[in-house]
Structure formats: structure tokens, C-alpha cells
Amino acid sequence: MTDGNPADGNPADAAFRDAFDDAFFRRIVEDSPEPYVVIDLEGTIRWASRSAAEIVGLEYDDYVGRSITDVLAPASLEMALEAFGEYSSPGRLDTGWIGPPLPLDLQHRDGHTVPCEVRRVPSPASLPGIVLTVTTSGPMSSLYEAIERIVADAPLDEVMTSIVRLIGVESPYSMPVIGLGWDGRRFATVAASPDAPTLDGDPLPAVEDGRSPWHVRLTTGESVADHDLSALDPTLREAAEAAGAVACWALPIEVAADGDALDPAMGRSVVVLWRRAAGRPRLNVFRRLDRIRGLVGLAIRSAHSRQELRRAARLDAVTGLPNRLALSEHFQDVARRPTTEIVGVLFCDLDHFKQVNDLHGHPTGDRALRIAADRMRARLRTDDVVARVGGDEFVVVTRTSERAAVGALAERLLTAFDSPIGLGDVSVPIGMSVGVATATGTELATGGVTGEALVERADAALLAAKSTGKHRIVWSD
Image (cartoon, rainbow, N blue to C red; front, side, top):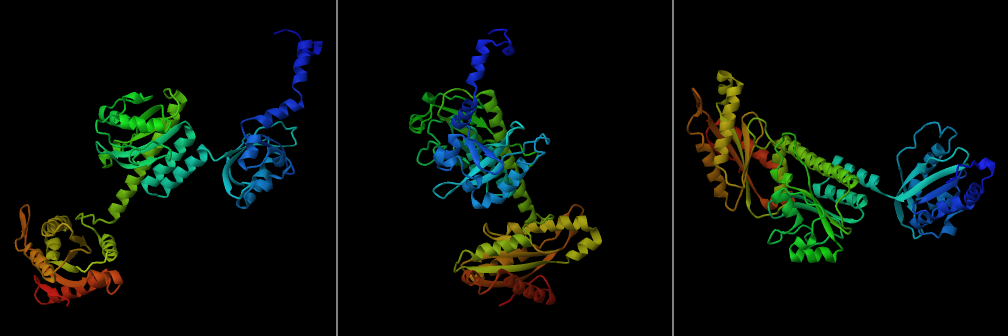
């Protein structure tokens, strides 16, 4: 280097200045791997990277000179014009804010749309135009897609698929796979990139000797990064190498549910990245992956919370039995599965329960209801359903091949209350009255009768039972 001042006519400085002419800067833009587009204030493309022209399938010479609106999909035109007005406004350089990427669809030469992100690049105030970068949808769009699916309560496997796409954008040399809910051999939910290695169609297979990165990670707790493929099960290694993998990262997912009863299996979940490039993850890559793992954990917790809300909305708070909403959904499920079985509905009401509340108070009444619910559950078969539909009213739904079995169940429920209910120092005599209605599964499936109509018929039979002495069974038909 020299200490000469360009004003003094230093020959080296003069040569340096001459090298940086207008053509040089134009070549920087045109040949840059970054897809730059420079448009004038009329919206005409004046300069561009060749990579930008390739996005819409045009040759460079056919791209430059077009109006930017020529390469926009019609649905994005209004948004683009609005942004163009903002980008080209006289005060655009005073805001100090460039703004987030603009999601726009471009029109490819063959007619299909190309989702892209457009970002304005700071440029000199003297430039009579706007400098943009135009890239096919990248991490931001993929992140938005994943978050939208979480917020929309999409099925967890769909959310994981969108996060797999996000990882693929963030880590282009990886073939990502997410496994949730490991039971010691297999995962309950698996989402994988299409190019990830598989064995018999399974991206995270159970290998006999356990020699897989996820097995090592979840069994020993050992952090697995740049896993030596030579240590894998031979068939798994062969599949990985055939897919182009030379290394593998297996990273745990933190899914603590803040005290909620989250399925413990969900705490045994991983992100697996089959790598086409050797080497351990750099610090900046680890940071990105940590954020993605956090997003996976958020998706799991969100799905768990929504599941708990749905479950709570269908349970009676006092007895823990299904409520009216759950009963209605059960009838819908029965109607979707045509069967020649008899569907029996038993409307049950506790006799003398009001006296328990009046004499001993509602907390004691609630305890009696819970004991009554337990007695009823103990008399049901595995597939029978009992729901609390009122203060001391319950509905039982049973399916059986014989009508007599419905009557036998009603008798079992009745005898369940032959003995008083013990509540500590208090023993209260509570009986039961039952109204019964039946139909065939075919009638429910074809709309000949509805579950609600069966409940109404059973309720009418119950009223008849109560009016003729209680603690008895009356059939509606």
C-alpha cells in the first residue's frame, strides 16, 4: 500500500479508480448469485441478476427491459403496487425501516406461480429507482406456514411436515426427519423430507441391534452429532449412503408441558438430520436448530393443550363422566358405522337424591354422585358408554346382538343401588329408576331414528317409571 493521496495523482490510485467504472458495477449485479433486481420509478427492470431471471424461466436479455408487472402473478399485483408506492415515495429514506420480506407470487414463463419473498435493499438517494432482492420462498415463509398450522390447530403430523420443510430451507445440506413419542422401539409420529433415507418405507425404522442415532440419543442420553455412519446397523447405513448421507445429527426435543400431564412418550422425541456434508454443526447452525426444536416443542405443547381443552369440554366436572356433548358425538360415531346390532339407550335417574342435597349439602351430594358414577361404571361392559346429562340423570348407551342383553344391563344398574351409599359417618339410601329405548344400528345409520330421539323415548319411559313407584325399569317399546 502507498500513502499517496488520489488528489496528488498517484498512478496506482488512478488505475484503481479506472477499474471501477459503470460496467464493473453492472457486472456485480448481473452476475451475482444473489437474485437482485433494479427497477426504475416507472417499474421497468433496468438491471438484474441472471439468477433473478431464472426464477421465472426467462433469459436475461428477455427479462431486463420488462415491466415488473409482467412477471407478477395477477393475485399479487395489488400488493406489489402498494409496496412499490411505499418503496418509491419521497420519504422512503427517512423512515429508517426497510420492512420485512414481501410475500409475492411471480408468474413463471410456463404459467405456474412461484412463491417468492421480495425485500428492498438500501440504495443511494441519487439512484432513480429501487433495488430489490427476489428469492423463492425461504425460511420466513416456511416459518409463517408452520406457525399458521400451529395456530389453526392442524393435526400434529401436518405441523411437523411444515417444520421439516423449514429445516430443509434452513439447512439445505440436510435431509430432516422428526420423530415424536418414542416407545423404546418406534415413534408414534414421524415427518420426513421426501429424500430422507428409509427402510421399508420407514424414515426412522427400528433396527434389531439398536444401532441408530436416535436409539443412541434416546437410550443413553448421549448427544449425537456427526454420527459415524460406520457405527450404524448395516442395512440402515446402506440406505443412508444410497440417499447421499455421509453424517447424521440426532438432537433431542424439549417438550416440558409446564406441569400439565403431557404424555411422557412425547418427551422422547428427536430431530434427525441426515447430512450430505461431513462435519459437526457450527455454532450458528446449532442456534438455528435450537430455535426449530423450540418450535417443535411449542407445537407439541399446543396440541396437548388443545387436546386437554377438548377433553375437558366433553367431561362432567363432578363425576368425570362424558357429558351431553360427548354423548352426542358418540351417537354420531355409532351412526357412521352401520351395524345390525341392537343399540340400547338407558335413561337413569337417582331416586331420593334431592334429599341428600337438602339434608347434607351439595358437597356431600357431589360425593354421592361420584360414588353413583363408579357403581354404574362397574356394571358396564368395555364398549358401553355412560354420560351424566343432568343433576342426577345419566344416560347409558350399549350395543348388543340381543335385546335381552339390554334388559340385563338395566337390571344390573338397578341392583347396583340396592345398598345405601356410605359417605363417612353418613349412609344415604339412593335408588335408581331406568327408562329404556332401543333401535338397530341400521336405523341410526340411515337416519330412521336419531340418538336424540332414542334419548327422548328413554326419558319418557323413565318418567313412567318414576310415576309408578320408582326403583324400576320401564321400556318405551
